Image (cartoon, rainbow, N blue to C red; front, top):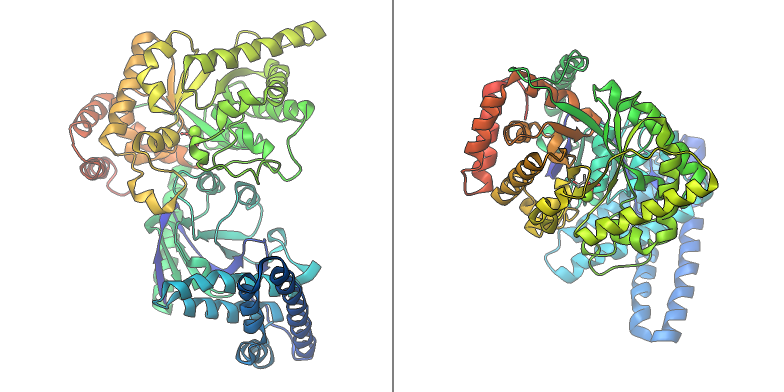
Length: 580
Ligand code: PEP
Ligand code: MG
């Protein structure tokens, strides 16, 4: 049994067989073959090794001519590994004696090989692991050829293990038989994590080397509530976890009854709970969870698909679908927030030295005005469908907000000239996601229709911690006193100015912060639909006076640890049964 600790994404327990997805999308299922198929599998292995060697020899030859012997040596090492009789013998033995398919035998043996390198103390040898991964990938490409299977065709529940998933891959998990996910990389507010959360199944990320420590076919438990992954569990552990899984499902079942109740505090203050969505059809599913509308529609996900950016008609159809999905409720559509960890297919090779501080969000839109205008036209054409608001991401200065609004007015004028009808009276607001915007919130309040606090980015820029980097994720902490004070100040200033203020970062959906946020005066929360029932339960259990006292005390601490411990203790007092 092997226990790995990572970063929590979504709670709950999932049990299943591992399927490894490597960087090139190969799913390596554990598959056994019949006695009659063994020879064909051995043949398939032999041709794959031969094809890999031919390729490698050509590459080594070319490199030697271009760059000399040293460069070619890397591939000579690969050739040596593939010619190693013990390695080949090990793969063949699994096929012959245990009837593994060629792909699962090769994957299992290569992963054991990687594990051996991982345990070496010499850092140079540990580096070799990348070479072994490269050899494995090449071999599997030849074994699987065109017959590679994709996740949509799984026939039984599995746990997906990968080094990383792109947001696009993550978005495709819905509707597959994947019941849990474990990743080597990632941090809790990376976009992959956000999508995993809206997918709703247990997931643990930032595990460093889970994809090399687990092989396809291994039994795996994902304990999303305690951020653990257990590989090859003992029967006793498995029994324990099955019981936990049942308990978790019972508790989430109890939340069902809350979905239809009002979000109102024990002293009668109405709170607005909205959903964060990435795809238009989720607007309707957010309503099923008890949302009153959409507080954040991340439209950039329309642009991340392999086939490239959608045209005006297609965008208009998507926005109209989302607007109709909220059945008359409010919906805030954010203009595309591209860059940082969300690159379009066309831009994916344009490496930036520091993408989180790079050409992202509104900066990217204002440098690509044609693309921006197409989106604004599509939004305007869909705007007559309902109660819409438009929001610009990552605004750092008034000049930027004004320029974005001017572009919107340009798009309005064009439509007017063309005689196309659209709505004019919708609020235009901004996301407050940087320290600069927080410091200047008073000035912004004079010009914006509303403010939505994006804590995912605000925390990363306040604390100088990349939100997607698992190596620094322990420093990324919403409980940091600087974060709490900034949020309090922004909400207070907005209230004084009479500007509507909501919060749509992940913090809004974390029950740990519900009392604090209520206590500093937040009345509109926007979160992943799955988090709505749990947050509502807490809201209904407390008075605003109590929340104010909790917030005041939380603001008095000097360190993030004290804040977290205190908030956890307070919630335990209110809802002693619930896991936090
Ligand atoms: C945020 O930064 O808090 C936010 C909601 O936007 P995103 O997570 O899409 O960057
Ligand atoms: Mg953001």
